[in-house]
Amino acid sequence: MLTVAILAGGLATRLRPRTETMPKSLLEVNGEPFAVHQLRLLQAKGIRRVVLCVGYLGELVQRAIGDGSALGLQVDYSFDGPALLGTAGAVRNALPKLGDSFFVMYGDSYLPCDYAAIARDFESANALGMMTVFRNEGKWDTSNVEFEAGKILVYSKTNRTPRMRYIDYGLGIFRAEAFQNLPAGEACDLTELYKDLLQRKQLAAFEVRERFYEIGSPAGLQETAEFLAAQEANQES
Image 1 (cartoon, rainbow, N blue to C red):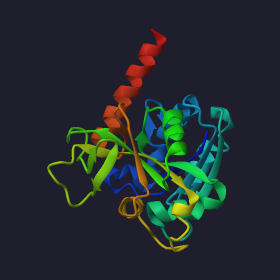
Image 2: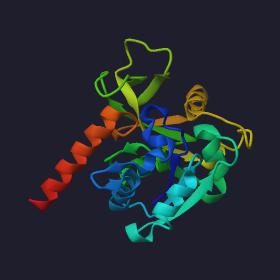
Image 3: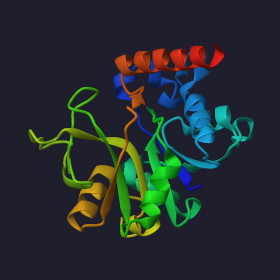
Image 4: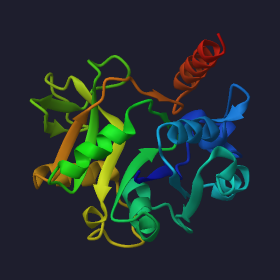
């Protein structure tokens, strides 16, 4: 299975003051750091290697998670350095640790989807990147994708249209080549890379049926905690 790059270097301003002294990925959810829940899910889905792209308070993440062996994973770290690199810049910085193709996801996302199926689909796609999309209908967050007949027609987080019924699910797959022209050491955003690949007809798509969960806001944190508690109760019954 492909390595997963987890983007966990943001400042988490929406969750302050809790994140002024603790990175978002270490916020407690049902008695454990959120990152533990996230990594446990990835291990259960067949992932064996993860690279955590960290910045702000990243040393706390490294201290808490270690090498990942307790969770059945091999966990490595890529530090932004003195300046935040943005989501795409952080991946560009981590390329030596990621291999020729890899997943990318966010450090505040819990995505219970079929990673193996997505990887297989990407393997057969003639593209530098793949975006997973979910039929959101504006329900869980603001829809930002026009998706039809298996293809992304429009993607934008700023210029919304009435035809945007889908949302960027938060899990991508890329070939390393997609990042190699980005300027090293400079801040770059993953959203802009997705848009560039779409314009170049180098962005494939995979429709996910399972909804996403996130801890990027207080409401999302509460909802994710409730979902994980319900899952645990079902497993015990």
